[in-house]
Image (tube, rainbow over all chains, first blue to last red; front, side, top):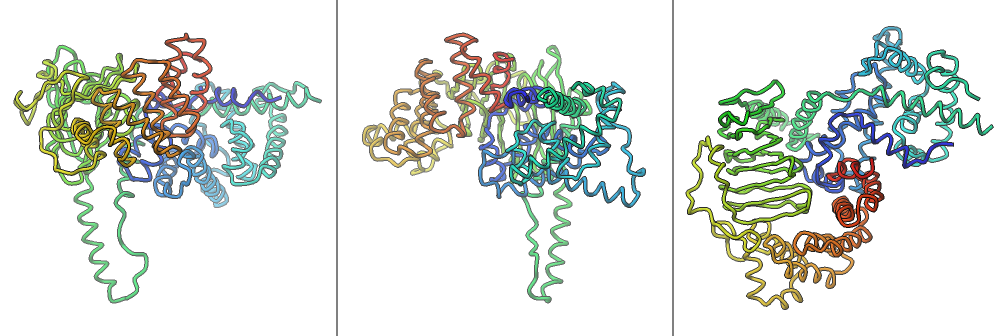
Length: 216
Length: 417
Protein backbone atom coordinates (compact mmCIF):
# COMPACT_ATOMS: atom_id res chain seq x y z
CA UNK A 1 0.00 0.00 0.00
CA UNK A 2 1.30 3.47 -0.80
CA UNK A 3 2.18 5.70 2.12
CA UNK A 4 -0.20 8.55 2.92
CA UNK A 5 -0.03 11.18 0.26
CA UNK A 6 0.55 14.11 2.60
CA UNK A 7 3.50 12.39 4.22
CA UNK A 8 4.84 11.59 0.80
CA UNK A 9 4.53 15.16 -0.38
CA UNK A 10 6.15 16.44 2.78
CA UNK A 11 9.02 14.05 2.37
CA UNK A 12 9.53 15.19 -1.17
CA UNK A 13 9.26 18.84 -0.16
CA UNK A 14 11.95 18.19 2.41
CA UNK A 15 14.29 17.23 -0.38
CA UNK A 16 13.92 20.47 -2.21
CA UNK A 17 16.12 20.20 -5.23
CA UNK A 18 17.47 23.67 -5.14
CA UNK A 19 19.89 24.77 -2.51
CA UNK A 20 18.31 28.20 -2.72
CA UNK A 21 14.78 27.31 -1.83
CA UNK A 22 15.53 28.35 1.71
CA UNK A 23 16.51 31.76 0.47
CA UNK A 24 13.19 32.08 -1.25
CA UNK A 25 11.37 30.95 1.82
CA UNK A 26 11.03 34.28 3.59
CA UNK A 27 9.38 35.91 0.61
CA UNK A 28 6.21 37.35 1.96
CA UNK A 29 3.71 37.42 -0.84
CA UNK A 30 1.35 34.51 -1.25
CA UNK A 31 0.97 32.83 -4.62
CA UNK A 32 -2.11 34.94 -5.19
CA UNK A 33 -0.07 38.09 -4.63
CA UNK A 34 2.74 36.78 -6.81
CA UNK A 35 0.34 36.02 -9.64
CA UNK A 36 -1.12 39.51 -9.34
CA UNK A 37 2.31 41.12 -9.32
CA UNK A 38 3.23 39.15 -12.43
CA UNK A 39 -0.03 40.00 -14.14
CA UNK A 40 0.41 43.68 -13.26
CA UNK A 41 3.92 43.52 -14.68
CA UNK A 42 5.36 44.61 -11.39
CA UNK A 43 9.16 44.73 -11.60
CA UNK A 44 9.51 42.68 -8.43
CA UNK A 45 7.63 39.75 -9.88
CA UNK A 46 10.49 38.16 -11.81
CA UNK A 47 12.71 38.02 -8.74
CA UNK A 48 10.00 36.75 -6.43
CA UNK A 49 8.63 34.09 -8.76
CA UNK A 50 12.12 32.93 -9.69
CA UNK A 51 13.29 32.70 -6.09
CA UNK A 52 10.26 30.71 -5.07
CA UNK A 53 9.82 28.39 -8.00
CA UNK A 54 13.00 28.05 -10.06
CA UNK A 55 14.12 25.08 -7.96
CA UNK A 56 10.81 23.30 -8.43
CA UNK A 57 10.71 24.00 -12.17
CA UNK A 58 14.33 22.94 -12.64
CA UNK A 59 13.61 19.67 -10.83
CA UNK A 60 10.49 18.91 -12.89
CA UNK A 61 12.42 19.56 -16.10
CA UNK A 62 15.48 17.59 -15.07
CA UNK A 63 13.42 14.60 -14.03
CA UNK A 64 11.25 14.80 -17.14
CA UNK A 65 13.84 15.19 -19.86
CA UNK A 66 16.58 13.27 -18.11
CA UNK A 67 20.17 13.93 -17.21
CA UNK A 68 21.44 14.14 -20.77
CA UNK A 69 19.87 17.53 -21.25
CA UNK A 70 21.07 20.88 -19.98
CA UNK A 71 17.90 22.24 -18.45
CA UNK A 72 18.97 25.83 -17.73
CA UNK A 73 17.65 27.14 -21.05
CA UNK A 74 14.45 25.18 -20.56
CA UNK A 75 13.99 26.72 -17.11
CA UNK A 76 14.25 30.15 -18.70
CA UNK A 77 11.73 29.12 -21.37
CA UNK A 78 9.27 28.09 -18.67
CA UNK A 79 9.47 31.38 -16.80
CA UNK A 80 9.36 33.49 -19.93
CA UNK A 81 6.31 31.47 -20.98
CA UNK A 82 4.83 32.14 -17.58
CA UNK A 83 5.28 35.91 -17.80
CA UNK A 84 3.91 35.96 -21.33
CA UNK A 85 0.84 33.95 -20.42
CA UNK A 86 0.14 34.90 -16.83
CA UNK A 87 -2.79 36.97 -18.09
CA UNK A 88 -4.58 33.71 -18.89
CA UNK A 89 -4.23 32.41 -15.33
CA UNK A 90 -7.81 32.57 -14.13
CA UNK A 91 -7.24 31.46 -10.55
CA UNK A 92 -4.22 33.25 -9.07
CA UNK A 93 -3.95 30.66 -6.31
CA UNK A 94 -3.14 28.08 -9.01
CA UNK A 95 0.20 29.65 -9.77
CA UNK A 96 2.18 26.53 -8.90
CA UNK A 97 0.15 24.09 -11.06
CA UNK A 98 0.16 26.71 -13.81
CA UNK A 99 3.96 26.70 -13.75
CA UNK A 100 4.06 22.91 -13.60
CA UNK A 101 1.82 22.81 -16.68
CA UNK A 102 4.17 25.11 -18.60
CA UNK A 103 7.16 23.06 -17.42
CA UNK A 104 5.52 19.87 -18.72
CA UNK A 105 4.75 21.40 -22.09
CA UNK A 106 8.34 22.63 -22.29
CA UNK A 107 9.64 19.20 -21.33
CA UNK A 108 7.35 17.55 -23.88
CA UNK A 109 8.68 19.83 -26.58
CA UNK A 110 12.27 19.12 -25.53
CA UNK A 111 11.61 15.37 -25.65
CA UNK A 112 10.17 15.67 -29.15
CA UNK A 113 13.24 17.60 -30.28
CA UNK A 114 15.43 14.98 -28.68
CA UNK A 115 13.70 12.26 -30.66
CA UNK A 116 14.09 14.23 -33.87
CA UNK A 117 17.76 14.77 -33.15
CA UNK A 118 18.18 11.09 -32.54
CA UNK A 119 16.32 10.26 -35.72
CA UNK A 120 18.57 12.67 -37.58
CA UNK A 121 21.61 11.04 -35.91
CA UNK A 122 22.63 14.34 -34.37
CA UNK A 123 23.33 12.60 -31.11
CA UNK A 124 25.35 9.46 -30.53
CA UNK A 125 23.02 6.75 -31.83
CA UNK A 126 20.45 7.52 -29.20
CA UNK A 127 22.47 6.52 -26.20
CA UNK A 128 22.38 8.65 -23.10
CA UNK A 129 25.62 10.58 -22.55
CA UNK A 130 27.42 10.74 -19.23
CA UNK A 131 25.11 11.86 -16.45
CA UNK A 132 26.09 15.26 -15.07
CA UNK A 133 24.71 14.34 -11.67
CA UNK A 134 25.77 16.03 -8.45
CA UNK A 135 25.89 12.59 -6.88
CA UNK A 136 29.43 11.32 -6.96
CA UNK A 137 28.39 7.71 -6.38
CA UNK A 138 29.12 6.02 -9.73
CA UNK A 139 26.62 3.27 -8.97
CA UNK A 140 23.81 5.79 -8.59
CA UNK A 141 24.87 7.56 -11.76
CA UNK A 142 24.87 4.30 -13.63
CA UNK A 143 21.46 3.36 -12.21
CA UNK A 144 20.02 6.71 -13.23
CA UNK A 145 21.48 6.39 -16.69
CA UNK A 146 19.88 2.97 -17.12
CA UNK A 147 16.58 4.22 -15.75
CA UNK A 148 16.42 6.97 -18.35
CA UNK A 149 17.17 4.49 -21.12
CA UNK A 150 14.01 2.71 -19.96
CA UNK A 151 12.03 5.95 -19.70
CA UNK A 152 13.17 6.91 -23.21
CA UNK A 153 11.27 3.84 -24.45
CA UNK A 154 7.98 5.22 -23.17
CA UNK A 155 5.67 7.54 -25.09
CA UNK A 156 6.34 11.09 -23.90
CA UNK A 157 3.06 11.60 -22.09
CA UNK A 158 3.33 8.31 -20.23
CA UNK A 159 6.84 9.23 -19.23
CA UNK A 160 5.68 12.62 -17.96
CA UNK A 161 2.84 11.00 -16.03
CA UNK A 162 5.32 8.59 -14.45
CA UNK A 163 7.66 11.41 -13.46
CA UNK A 164 4.87 13.52 -11.99
CA UNK A 165 3.46 10.65 -9.99
CA UNK A 166 6.61 8.95 -8.77
CA UNK A 167 9.32 11.61 -8.76
CA UNK A 168 7.25 14.70 -8.01
CA UNK A 169 4.80 12.94 -5.73
CA UNK A 170 1.70 14.34 -7.41
CA UNK A 171 -1.69 12.88 -6.63
CA UNK A 172 -3.51 11.12 -9.46
CA UNK A 173 -5.91 14.01 -9.86
CA UNK A 174 -3.06 16.53 -9.95
CA UNK A 175 -1.22 14.42 -12.50
CA UNK A 176 -4.33 14.20 -14.66
CA UNK A 177 -4.93 17.90 -14.37
CA UNK A 178 -1.33 18.79 -15.20
CA UNK A 179 -1.43 16.62 -18.32
CA UNK A 180 -4.92 17.80 -19.17
CA UNK A 181 -6.40 14.29 -19.36
CA UNK A 182 -9.13 12.53 -17.44
CA UNK A 183 -8.47 10.59 -14.28
CA UNK A 184 -9.25 7.32 -16.06
CA UNK A 185 -6.81 8.15 -18.84
CA UNK A 186 -4.02 9.05 -16.49
CA UNK A 187 -4.57 5.81 -14.58
CA UNK A 188 -4.22 3.84 -17.81
CA UNK A 189 -1.12 5.82 -18.80
CA UNK A 190 0.44 5.17 -15.41
CA UNK A 191 -0.40 1.47 -15.46
CA UNK A 192 1.36 1.06 -18.79
CA UNK A 193 4.36 3.15 -17.72
CA UNK A 194 4.68 1.44 -14.36
CA UNK A 195 4.44 -2.02 -15.90
CA UNK A 196 7.08 -1.14 -18.46
CA UNK A 197 9.48 0.35 -15.92
CA UNK A 198 8.99 -2.54 -13.52
CA UNK A 199 9.52 -5.21 -16.15
CA UNK A 200 12.57 -3.57 -17.66
CA UNK A 201 14.07 -2.68 -14.28
CA UNK A 202 13.64 -6.25 -13.11
CA UNK A 203 15.69 -7.46 -16.07
CA UNK A 204 18.47 -5.04 -15.22
CA UNK A 205 20.78 -6.34 -12.51
CA UNK A 206 21.85 -2.94 -11.28
CA UNK A 207 18.37 -1.39 -11.27
CA UNK A 208 16.84 -4.50 -9.79
CA UNK A 209 19.41 -4.38 -7.04
CA UNK A 210 18.93 -0.65 -6.56
CA UNK A 211 15.18 -0.89 -6.22
CA UNK A 212 15.26 -3.73 -3.73
CA UNK A 213 15.19 -6.68 -6.10
CA UNK A 214 12.55 -9.29 -6.59
CA UNK A 215 11.03 -9.47 -3.17
CA UNK A 216 7.70 -11.13 -3.83
CA UNK B 1 -0.96 -10.91 -3.81
CA UNK B 2 -0.95 -7.84 -1.60
CA UNK B 3 2.72 -8.56 -0.90
CA UNK B 4 3.35 -8.51 -4.63
CA UNK B 5 1.53 -5.22 -4.89
CA UNK B 6 3.39 -3.68 -1.99
CA UNK B 7 6.68 -4.98 -3.40
CA UNK B 8 5.88 -3.31 -6.70
CA UNK B 9 4.90 -0.10 -4.93
CA UNK B 10 8.15 -0.16 -2.99
CA UNK B 11 10.18 -0.61 -6.15
CA UNK B 12 8.39 2.29 -7.83
CA UNK B 13 8.98 4.38 -4.76
CA UNK B 14 12.68 3.52 -4.99
CA UNK B 15 12.68 4.55 -8.64
CA UNK B 16 11.15 7.91 -7.67
CA UNK B 17 13.69 8.24 -4.92
CA UNK B 18 16.53 7.61 -7.35
CA UNK B 19 15.21 10.34 -9.65
CA UNK B 20 14.85 12.80 -6.81
CA UNK B 21 18.20 12.12 -5.24
CA UNK B 22 20.00 12.39 -8.54
CA UNK B 23 18.45 15.78 -9.28
CA UNK B 24 21.26 18.29 -8.98
CA UNK B 25 20.70 21.49 -7.05
CA UNK B 26 21.45 24.70 -8.88
CA UNK B 27 24.62 26.38 -7.73
CA UNK B 28 24.32 29.84 -6.28
CA UNK B 29 25.89 31.21 -9.42
CA UNK B 30 23.40 29.36 -11.63
CA UNK B 31 20.56 30.66 -9.48
CA UNK B 32 21.69 34.28 -9.66
CA UNK B 33 22.58 34.15 -13.34
CA UNK B 34 19.26 32.54 -14.12
CA UNK B 35 17.44 35.20 -12.20
CA UNK B 36 19.35 38.00 -13.94
CA UNK B 37 18.54 36.43 -17.32
CA UNK B 38 14.88 36.22 -16.43
CA UNK B 39 14.73 39.82 -15.18
CA UNK B 40 16.24 40.98 -18.47
CA UNK B 41 13.79 38.84 -20.48
CA UNK B 42 10.79 40.01 -18.49
CA UNK B 43 11.90 43.60 -18.95
CA UNK B 44 11.67 43.00 -22.70
CA UNK B 45 8.20 41.50 -22.31
CA UNK B 46 7.17 44.49 -20.20
CA UNK B 47 8.12 46.78 -23.07
CA UNK B 48 6.78 44.88 -26.05
CA UNK B 49 7.42 46.01 -29.54
CA UNK B 50 4.45 47.91 -30.82
CA UNK B 51 4.95 46.71 -34.39
CA UNK B 52 1.62 45.52 -35.75
CA UNK B 53 1.40 41.97 -37.05
CA UNK B 54 -0.32 42.92 -40.27
CA UNK B 55 -0.10 46.05 -42.35
CA UNK B 56 -3.13 46.89 -44.39
CA UNK B 57 -1.38 49.13 -46.84
CA UNK B 58 1.81 48.22 -48.52
CA UNK B 59 2.62 51.90 -48.82
CA UNK B 60 3.28 52.05 -45.09
CA UNK B 61 5.77 49.22 -45.13
CA UNK B 62 8.83 51.33 -45.76
CA UNK B 63 7.86 53.85 -43.10
CA UNK B 64 7.22 51.10 -40.57
CA UNK B 65 10.52 49.42 -41.39
CA UNK B 66 12.30 52.72 -40.88
CA UNK B 67 10.54 53.24 -37.55
CA UNK B 68 11.51 49.78 -36.42
CA UNK B 69 15.11 50.48 -37.30
CA UNK B 70 15.05 53.69 -35.28
CA UNK B 71 13.50 51.90 -32.31
CA UNK B 72 16.04 49.10 -32.53
CA UNK B 73 18.89 51.58 -32.57
CA UNK B 74 17.44 53.39 -29.57
CA UNK B 75 16.93 50.11 -27.77
CA UNK B 76 20.52 49.21 -28.53
CA UNK B 77 21.68 52.32 -26.72
CA UNK B 78 19.28 51.81 -23.84
CA UNK B 79 19.83 48.10 -23.57
CA UNK B 80 23.10 48.10 -21.66
CA UNK B 81 22.80 47.22 -18.00
CA UNK B 82 24.11 49.84 -15.63
CA UNK B 83 27.78 49.27 -14.85
CA UNK B 84 29.09 49.50 -11.32
CA UNK B 85 32.25 49.27 -9.29
CA UNK B 86 33.28 49.28 -5.66
CA UNK B 87 35.15 52.06 -3.93
CA UNK B 88 37.01 51.27 -0.69
CA UNK B 89 36.39 47.56 -1.10
CA UNK B 90 36.25 44.68 -3.54
CA UNK B 91 33.48 42.58 -5.03
CA UNK B 92 33.65 38.87 -5.72
CA UNK B 93 32.84 37.47 -9.14
CA UNK B 94 29.23 37.00 -8.06
CA UNK B 95 28.92 40.61 -6.91
CA UNK B 96 29.37 39.98 -3.19
CA UNK B 97 30.81 42.75 -1.07
CA UNK B 98 31.67 42.17 2.55
CA UNK B 99 32.98 44.95 4.77
CA UNK B 100 35.01 43.94 7.83
CA UNK B 101 33.81 45.59 11.06
CA UNK B 102 37.01 47.56 11.40
CA UNK B 103 37.15 48.77 7.81
CA UNK B 104 35.70 52.03 6.55
CA UNK B 105 32.43 51.90 4.67
CA UNK B 106 32.58 50.88 1.03
CA UNK B 107 30.58 52.32 -1.83
CA UNK B 108 28.98 50.56 -4.74
CA UNK B 109 29.05 53.23 -7.41
CA UNK B 110 26.73 52.89 -10.39
CA UNK B 111 27.33 54.72 -13.61
CA UNK B 112 23.86 56.29 -13.63
CA UNK B 113 24.90 58.41 -10.63
CA UNK B 114 23.40 56.17 -7.96
CA UNK B 115 25.43 54.72 -5.15
CA UNK B 116 25.07 52.43 -2.16
CA UNK B 117 27.36 52.83 0.85
CA UNK B 118 27.76 49.71 2.98
CA UNK B 119 28.57 50.25 6.65
CA UNK B 120 31.42 48.44 8.40
CA UNK B 121 30.40 44.89 9.27
CA UNK B 122 27.80 44.73 6.50
CA UNK B 123 27.40 42.23 3.69
CA UNK B 124 25.65 42.82 0.43
CA UNK B 125 25.69 42.05 -3.23
CA UNK B 126 24.50 43.33 -6.54
CA UNK B 127 22.15 40.60 -7.67
CA UNK B 128 21.34 42.07 -11.05
CA UNK B 129 21.56 45.21 -13.10
CA UNK B 130 19.33 46.34 -15.93
CA UNK B 131 19.43 49.36 -18.19
CA UNK B 132 17.11 51.19 -15.78
CA UNK B 133 18.18 50.03 -12.36
CA UNK B 134 19.61 47.29 -10.22
CA UNK B 135 18.74 44.83 -7.54
CA UNK B 136 20.93 45.20 -4.48
CA UNK B 137 20.72 42.70 -1.66
CA UNK B 138 21.60 43.76 1.87
CA UNK B 139 22.26 40.47 3.61
CA UNK B 140 23.29 41.95 6.92
CA UNK B 141 24.09 45.36 8.32
CA UNK B 142 23.34 48.84 7.15
CA UNK B 143 23.44 50.66 3.85
CA UNK B 144 22.84 54.19 2.75
CA UNK B 145 21.12 54.09 -0.62
CA UNK B 146 21.05 56.97 -3.02
CA UNK B 147 19.22 56.35 -6.28
CA UNK B 148 19.52 58.97 -8.94
CA UNK B 149 16.06 59.95 -10.07
CA UNK B 150 15.45 59.14 -13.74
CA UNK B 151 12.33 58.47 -15.74
CA UNK B 152 11.43 54.77 -15.58
CA UNK B 153 14.20 54.02 -13.09
CA UNK B 154 13.53 50.74 -11.28
CA UNK B 155 15.63 49.82 -8.32
CA UNK B 156 15.06 47.15 -5.76
CA UNK B 157 16.84 46.82 -2.45
CA UNK B 158 16.27 43.44 -0.78
CA UNK B 159 16.80 43.29 2.96
CA UNK B 160 16.01 39.86 4.34
CA UNK B 161 12.49 38.99 3.24
CA UNK B 162 11.64 42.65 2.63
CA UNK B 163 11.95 44.51 -0.64
CA UNK B 164 12.28 48.26 -0.95
CA UNK B 165 11.20 49.55 -4.32
CA UNK B 166 12.83 52.78 -5.39
CA UNK B 167 12.58 55.16 -8.28
CA UNK B 168 14.68 58.07 -7.03
CA UNK B 169 15.47 58.80 -3.42
CA UNK B 170 17.93 58.59 -0.58
CA UNK B 171 17.45 56.49 2.49
CA UNK B 172 19.20 54.43 5.10
CA UNK B 173 18.27 50.77 5.38
CA UNK B 174 19.32 48.30 8.04
CA UNK B 175 18.63 44.59 8.23
CA UNK B 176 19.56 42.67 11.36
CA UNK B 177 19.32 39.04 10.30
CA UNK B 178 19.65 37.66 13.82
CA UNK B 179 16.90 39.90 15.20
CA UNK B 180 14.92 39.69 11.94
CA UNK B 181 14.39 43.43 12.06
CA UNK B 182 14.20 45.88 9.19
CA UNK B 183 14.72 49.62 9.64
CA UNK B 184 14.32 52.22 6.94
CA UNK B 185 15.03 55.91 7.52
CA UNK B 186 13.90 58.13 4.67
CA UNK B 187 16.11 61.08 3.78
CA UNK B 188 14.34 62.21 0.65
CA UNK B 189 11.90 60.99 -1.96
CA UNK B 190 9.65 58.00 -1.55
CA UNK B 191 9.96 54.24 -1.45
CA UNK B 192 7.56 51.33 -1.32
CA UNK B 193 8.30 48.48 1.04
CA UNK B 194 6.84 44.99 0.73
CA UNK B 195 7.32 41.90 2.79
CA UNK B 196 5.81 39.69 5.43
CA UNK B 197 3.88 41.37 8.28
CA UNK B 198 3.43 44.51 6.20
CA UNK B 199 0.23 43.40 4.53
CA UNK B 200 -0.08 45.72 1.56
CA UNK B 201 2.90 47.53 0.13
CA UNK B 202 3.80 50.40 2.41
CA UNK B 203 4.87 53.80 1.14
CA UNK B 204 7.39 55.86 3.05
CA UNK B 205 8.33 59.44 2.40
CA UNK B 206 10.84 62.00 3.60
CA UNK B 207 11.50 61.99 7.33
CA UNK B 208 9.69 58.74 8.08
CA UNK B 209 11.18 55.73 9.76
CA UNK B 210 9.86 52.18 9.44
CA UNK B 211 10.66 49.34 11.77
CA UNK B 212 9.33 45.88 10.94
CA UNK B 213 10.13 42.96 13.22
CA UNK B 214 9.45 39.50 11.85
CA UNK B 215 9.52 37.52 15.06
CA UNK B 216 6.63 39.36 16.71
CA UNK B 217 5.10 40.89 13.61
CA UNK B 218 5.48 44.46 14.83
CA UNK B 219 5.31 47.25 12.29
CA UNK B 220 5.95 50.80 13.42
CA UNK B 221 6.19 53.97 11.40
CA UNK B 222 7.43 57.05 13.15
CA UNK B 223 9.84 59.92 12.77
CA UNK B 224 12.73 58.37 14.67
CA UNK B 225 15.94 60.02 13.50
CA UNK B 226 18.76 58.05 12.01
CA UNK B 227 21.06 56.45 14.55
CA UNK B 228 24.36 58.21 15.22
CA UNK B 229 26.25 55.34 13.60
CA UNK B 230 24.62 56.38 10.33
CA UNK B 231 27.46 58.84 9.98
CA UNK B 232 29.62 55.82 9.24
CA UNK B 233 27.71 55.13 6.08
CA UNK B 234 27.41 58.57 4.67
CA UNK B 235 30.20 58.48 2.13
CA UNK B 236 27.52 60.34 0.35
CA UNK B 237 27.40 62.11 -2.92
CA UNK B 238 24.54 64.13 -1.50
CA UNK B 239 24.88 65.34 2.07
CA UNK B 240 22.27 64.15 4.52
CA UNK B 241 19.51 66.66 5.25
CA UNK B 242 20.02 69.19 7.99
CA UNK B 243 18.72 68.09 11.40
CA UNK B 244 15.90 70.61 11.16
CA UNK B 245 14.45 68.57 8.29
CA UNK B 246 14.02 65.54 10.50
CA UNK B 247 11.13 65.65 12.89
CA UNK B 248 11.56 63.77 16.11
CA UNK B 249 8.39 62.22 17.38
CA UNK B 250 7.75 59.73 20.12
CA UNK B 251 7.56 56.26 18.55
CA UNK B 252 4.14 54.73 18.50
CA UNK B 253 2.40 57.89 19.68
CA UNK B 254 2.37 60.16 16.73
CA UNK B 255 3.32 60.07 13.13
CA UNK B 256 4.39 63.12 11.31
CA UNK B 257 3.59 63.23 7.65
CA UNK B 258 5.92 64.12 4.86
CA UNK B 259 7.59 67.49 4.98
CA UNK B 260 6.36 68.40 1.54
CA UNK B 261 2.85 69.83 1.35
CA UNK B 262 0.15 67.45 0.24
CA UNK B 263 -2.31 68.68 -2.35
CA UNK B 264 -5.76 69.38 -0.99
CA UNK B 265 -8.48 66.83 -1.47
CA UNK B 266 -6.70 63.53 -2.06
CA UNK B 267 -8.60 60.43 -1.04
CA UNK B 268 -7.77 58.73 2.23
CA UNK B 269 -6.40 55.77 0.33
CA UNK B 270 -4.03 58.07 -1.51
CA UNK B 271 -3.02 59.75 1.73
CA UNK B 272 -2.25 56.37 3.29
CA UNK B 273 -0.30 55.36 0.19
CA UNK B 274 1.73 58.51 0.52
CA UNK B 275 2.34 57.88 4.20
CA UNK B 276 0.29 60.79 5.51
CA UNK B 277 -1.55 58.77 8.16
CA UNK B 278 -1.86 61.69 10.55
CA UNK B 279 -3.88 63.68 8.06
CA UNK B 280 -6.36 60.84 7.55
CA UNK B 281 -6.91 60.59 11.30
CA UNK B 282 -7.19 64.40 11.59
CA UNK B 283 -9.79 64.54 8.82
CA UNK B 284 -11.78 61.73 10.43
CA UNK B 285 -11.69 63.58 13.75
CA UNK B 286 -12.76 66.81 12.10
CA UNK B 287 -15.64 65.09 10.35
CA UNK B 288 -16.61 63.15 13.44
CA UNK B 289 -15.36 59.57 13.66
CA UNK B 290 -18.85 58.15 14.19
CA UNK B 291 -20.15 59.94 11.12
CA UNK B 292 -17.19 58.85 9.03
CA UNK B 293 -17.58 55.22 10.08
CA UNK B 294 -21.26 55.28 9.24
CA UNK B 295 -21.11 57.09 5.95
CA UNK B 296 -17.69 56.86 4.33
CA UNK B 297 -17.21 54.42 1.41
CA UNK B 298 -15.41 51.12 1.81
CA UNK B 299 -12.04 52.37 0.56
CA UNK B 300 -12.02 55.22 3.07
CA UNK B 301 -12.85 52.93 5.97
CA UNK B 302 -10.04 50.57 5.10
CA UNK B 303 -7.70 53.55 4.69
CA UNK B 304 -8.77 54.98 8.04
CA UNK B 305 -8.13 51.62 9.72
CA UNK B 306 -4.68 51.42 8.14
CA UNK B 307 -3.84 55.02 9.04
CA UNK B 308 -4.89 54.44 12.65
CA UNK B 309 -2.97 51.19 12.84
CA UNK B 310 0.22 52.66 11.44
CA UNK B 311 0.00 55.68 13.69
CA UNK B 312 -0.43 53.62 16.84
CA UNK B 313 -4.15 54.21 17.46
CA UNK B 314 -5.49 50.67 17.92
CA UNK B 315 -8.89 51.77 19.20
CA UNK B 316 -9.62 53.75 16.05
CA UNK B 317 -8.17 50.99 13.86
CA UNK B 318 -10.47 48.45 15.49
CA UNK B 319 -13.50 50.67 14.96
CA UNK B 320 -12.67 51.27 11.31
CA UNK B 321 -12.01 47.62 10.48
CA UNK B 322 -15.10 46.56 12.41
CA UNK B 323 -17.14 49.04 10.40
CA UNK B 324 -15.78 47.44 7.23
CA UNK B 325 -16.96 44.07 8.47
CA UNK B 326 -20.42 45.17 9.50
CA UNK B 327 -21.22 47.59 6.72
CA UNK B 328 -19.65 45.56 3.92
CA UNK B 329 -20.13 42.05 5.23
CA UNK B 330 -19.22 39.35 2.73
CA UNK B 331 -16.85 41.54 0.73
CA UNK B 332 -13.19 40.73 0.22
CA UNK B 333 -12.30 43.79 2.29
CA UNK B 334 -14.44 42.48 5.13
CA UNK B 335 -12.45 39.25 5.12
CA UNK B 336 -9.19 41.15 4.99
CA UNK B 337 -10.39 43.29 7.89
CA UNK B 338 -10.54 40.14 10.02
CA UNK B 339 -6.85 39.56 9.40
CA UNK B 340 -6.06 43.21 10.11
CA UNK B 341 -8.04 43.09 13.35
CA UNK B 342 -5.81 40.18 14.27
CA UNK B 343 -2.77 42.28 13.52
CA UNK B 344 -4.06 45.10 15.71
CA UNK B 345 -4.86 42.71 18.54
CA UNK B 346 -1.45 41.09 18.38
CA UNK B 347 0.74 44.04 17.59
CA UNK B 348 -0.83 46.87 19.52
CA UNK B 349 -3.24 45.39 22.07
CA UNK B 350 -0.89 42.50 22.84
CA UNK B 351 -3.91 40.25 23.14
CA UNK B 352 -2.76 36.95 21.70
CA UNK B 353 -6.10 35.24 22.30
CA UNK B 354 -8.01 37.90 20.37
CA UNK B 355 -5.41 37.85 17.64
CA UNK B 356 -5.62 34.07 17.27
CA UNK B 357 -9.42 34.29 17.08
CA UNK B 358 -9.27 36.87 14.31
CA UNK B 359 -6.70 34.83 12.39
CA UNK B 360 -9.02 31.84 12.68
CA UNK B 361 -11.88 33.95 11.43
CA UNK B 362 -9.85 35.06 8.45
CA UNK B 363 -8.72 31.51 7.64
CA UNK B 364 -12.30 30.28 7.86
CA UNK B 365 -13.62 33.06 5.64
CA UNK B 366 -10.73 33.20 3.18
CA UNK B 367 -8.81 29.91 3.25
CA UNK B 368 -7.09 30.78 -0.02
CA UNK B 369 -6.85 34.49 0.67
CA UNK B 370 -3.85 36.71 0.19
CA UNK B 371 -3.08 36.71 3.91
CA UNK B 372 -3.79 33.04 4.59
CA UNK B 373 -0.10 32.25 4.95
CA UNK B 374 0.48 35.15 7.30
CA UNK B 375 -2.62 34.33 9.35
CA UNK B 376 -1.65 30.69 9.74
CA UNK B 377 1.97 31.56 10.44
CA UNK B 378 1.12 34.17 13.03
CA UNK B 379 -1.32 31.82 14.72
CA UNK B 380 1.31 29.11 14.84
CA UNK B 381 3.74 31.54 16.50
CA UNK B 382 1.11 32.70 19.00
CA UNK B 383 0.08 29.16 19.93
CA UNK B 384 3.71 28.13 20.29
CA UNK B 385 4.29 31.02 22.68
CA UNK B 386 1.15 30.65 24.73
CA UNK B 387 0.54 26.88 24.70
CA UNK B 388 3.89 25.39 23.85
CA UNK B 389 5.51 23.62 20.95
CA UNK B 390 3.35 20.51 21.09
CA UNK B 391 0.18 22.52 20.68
CA UNK B 392 1.67 24.43 17.75
CA UNK B 393 2.95 21.35 15.92
CA UNK B 394 -0.27 20.56 13.99
CA UNK B 395 -0.38 24.18 12.84
CA UNK B 396 3.25 23.94 11.75
CA UNK B 397 2.50 20.77 9.77
CA UNK B 398 -0.48 22.44 8.16
CA UNK B 399 1.60 25.50 7.36
CA UNK B 400 4.33 23.44 5.71
CA UNK B 401 1.80 21.53 3.65
CA UNK B 402 0.29 24.72 2.33
CA UNK B 403 3.23 27.14 2.32
CA UNK B 404 6.47 25.14 2.18
CA UNK B 405 8.31 28.21 0.96
CA UNK B 406 6.47 30.74 3.10
CA UNK B 407 7.98 33.22 5.53
CA UNK B 408 7.19 31.05 8.55
CA UNK B 409 8.47 27.81 7.00
CA UNK B 410 11.71 27.87 9.00
CA UNK B 411 9.79 28.32 12.26
CA UNK B 412 7.35 25.61 11.22
CA UNK B 413 10.15 23.16 10.42
CA UNK B 414 11.63 23.87 13.80
CA UNK B 415 8.31 22.88 15.37
CA UNK B 416 7.53 19.96 13.09
CA UNK B 417 10.81 18.67 11.70
